[in-house]
Length: 162
Image (cartoon, rainbow, N blue to C red):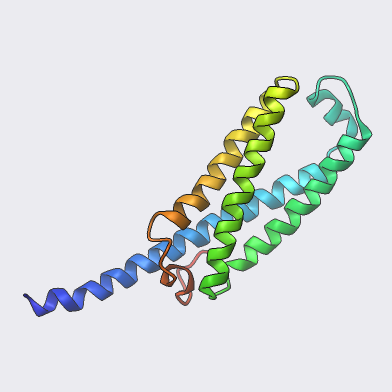
């Protein structure tokens, strides 16, 4: 065997792991930005606008739940944004697993509401977005070499998205 091919392998693997780390950081950044945006909109949504979106009826309790969910999304966005700076591989892997499960359970909950309550286009949009984000975390965690701890704990480089 060619000795050069044996020494070249670790360098390619390291680059691949660094690329995967950057991809995960990008997923975290997109998720954080979307969470912060949605949370802020949910928190600040005026009741008149909400009344038009849901078709004329206004429920103060539902509006309060939307605002509370907005607060949770803002907090989650803040956490996920800062997780990008963490180099602890087990922690980052656990975050991927938790977010994968969280988004898919939310998608199932909205899907159930879609079929048991009134049909709503907003629900279909939410189902699509939640499934897509959850799938990104799932594909990263359970595919793309996500079982390898190195993917999560490589030190950051200057090229990592901030």
